Length: 588
Image 1 (cartoon, rainbow, N blue to C red):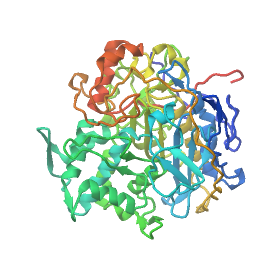
Image 2 (tube, helix red, strand yellow):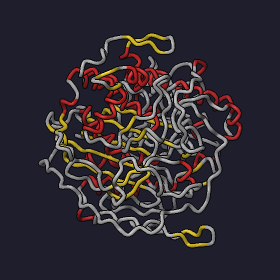
Image 3 (cartoon, rainbow, N blue to C red):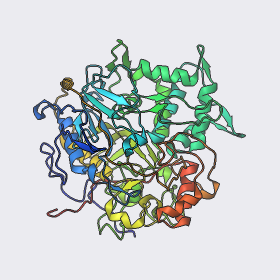
Image 4 (tube, helix red, strand yellow):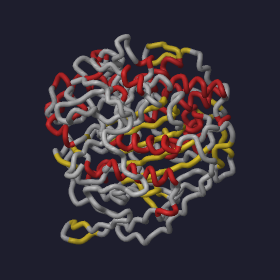
């Protein structure tokens, strides 16, 4: 169904005051400690640290914490189990707010997990880093219950005594951002000619075309090509991929790691070697943005990280590619302009989220998206009416697998609109296994042409609430460099949190790794572009051959599912989101 465009780019309901988190259906404290009966004994989880007191939070930290509470991620629907999720999802939200000169005005990092069901503010230190968190690698089995939650491999060694802990989710195709930066890092050192051609699997294309397909369409084959090239390039005795990983560490982006990939195929993306936390991802995008042109942060090792980490030519090259991203469907949802479903009422679904323009380069002459496939909403939605009411640009890269959903990018206000300039990054375990309860009848919303929406509506609700708060501040007011948030003292930690139940392995494993392509689904590649697993639920990366026989278990139309999976395998994206959550409760 296609209705007239929704004219309020922020939400379908008024946003609550962000200084006071709104009512939630599941009331739990920030430092909740829950006892779980396991094997006849009472197992007590880690006593997690409370968030800083409300009067210690910056304005943006209060805004993001309130937006997280408003989104209510504990209410997402698990299509795999056919009910609202029993486990609080893992959601990592980071925002860096800039002023008109590009100087950092404020920053925030909020984590949601079973340790912090209502969200906790991760303090940001003097080096603009979330060093107060013990970051652990994603393990799907531990999350689902067949392993002990809270025990795992550290991403950064030596933080065993950190006051906060968080199992960082697989970044999905967001990882392709690191590969693109690696190309420019090496080009700036004379090791790569970005105007040259590269041949992969018998196909020769300009490096710029490979990279554009990797970012704009999230194409997995193109991503394999560029990662393979990074393995082949040599600079000062290192491979390009080694140089990239070392450079990210030198810049203090210690949780950004593109390791364990195959030098032969460019694939092999896995949870064990690939990691991206949201705040470090936001800082990477801050480098792309350029900020004020001066020093952005200073690492603990004394390295001044400034905008000149990228050459002007390299930054322009990347920004041109980022500006044409075709997939606007998680934090902003322009691809779903004015769309409704039989299950969600007359208002646009999903919500608008960040009120961003969908790039004209990603549209056909009739205003529909180039990512459209036959029978999908995209095939009939003219996004131009929403572009006319848009308020910002959003240069973004998204990620999507069965158990991972992510989006990150740069937001800038359009001329004449309320000022905002900020970086936002969200990573989570909420891939297309999850969605909204209103769409339960579809079997899986992502695989059904009744929806074709591959995330939960809570994401655009979250992003739209944050955007509205930043827009309300506008350009007025002096820049006040935020003081580092006080780091909570570590608490005594008894036993890690066991999970009370085990989630059975899903029979629906669209292991296609790429996220949609805008090309003919029949051309989908069956190559195993990524061998990683997200824990037995589905492949943890976005490539690989889809298990056609498993689709019957999804309850979706087989032809629809195969079409979607073919798109995912070819590489591309996800679909666009918007802004407000449509969870209807009494009194709303």
